[in-house]
Image 1 (cartoon, helix red, strand yellow):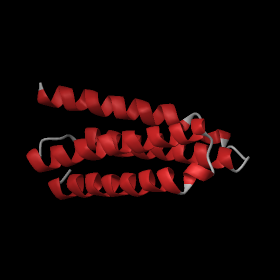
Image 2 (cartoon, one colour):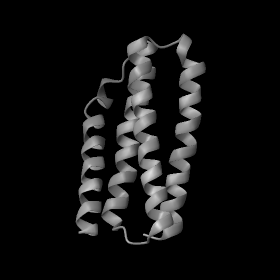
Image 3 (cartoon, rainbow, N blue to C red):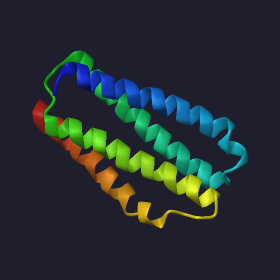
Image 4 (cartoon, rainbow, N blue to C red):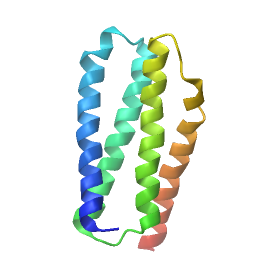
Amino acid sequence: MTQQIIIATGALFGMLSVIFGAFGAHALKKILSAEQLHSFEVGVKYQMYHAIVLLTIGLNSNNITSAAYWCFTLGVILFSFSIYGLALSDAKGEKFRFLGPITPIGGLLLAIGWLLLLINVL
C-alpha cells in the first residue's frame, strides 16, 4: 500500500468524521433520540480514531501491510457507516435491521487491523 493512499484514506475519513460530527451535533440533534444520537457519535469517534491511526502510519512509515490497511479501511466503512445507517433509519421509523450484523463485522476488522499492526511492529 502506498504512503499517499494511506494518508489520503486517513484524511478522507478524518474530514468526513468532522462533517458527520457537526451534522450530528446540529442537524440531527432535533431528529434523533438521545440514544440514537449517542450511537451516531460512537460511529463518528471510531471513524476519527482510525483516521488518525492511518494518518500517523502514513506520515511516519510506509511499513504497514496491505491487510492491515484494508482491515482498518473496511472496518471503518462497515462499523461506522452501518451505525450511521441504523441511527438515521431508526429515526425515520424504518430501522434497517440488515445493517445490525454488519456493525460487529466492521468492529472485528478494526480489531484485526490493530493485531496486524502489532504483528508488523514486532
